Amino acid sequence: ECDALTVSLEEARASAAKFEKRAAAAEKIAANAISHAETEEDRHIAESETLNERCEALATEARAAIEAHCASTARIDELETKLSEAEMKLAEAEAASESASASNTRPSTPSPVKGENDPELVSSEVKLSINVDGGARELA
Image (cartoon, rainbow, N blue to C red; front, side, top):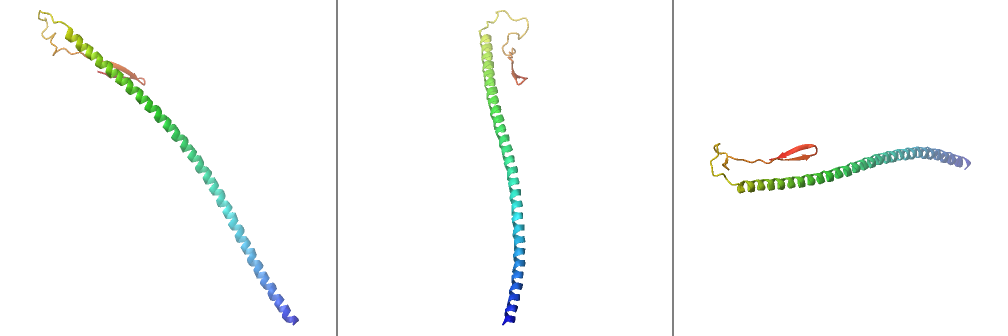
């Protein structure tokens, strides 16, 4: 009976040694998996930080673009107003010129130069110059 117990004890020790080896291998695998997970987590954190920085930079650029657009729109509105005012002044000047031409009396004697007082041959030209951003723009 002692021999049977001795054999059983040896078998139990051998079995325990196998389980210890398997447990050690499992611990290594678990340690590697944890290390890999930590590395991946660090990588994801770094990528997230990079993406957040890019998003912030794009948001800043977008805000600047919106501000520039608003400023440009305001400038366009201002220039359109100036152009409308200039067109109104031009129309007033043309109307005044036509009115002045219509109120002029013609001399009763013919002109020494043929067609000098003929309204069909006489033209009046009014030029209006607007200075826009350092460049002159001329309306006729």
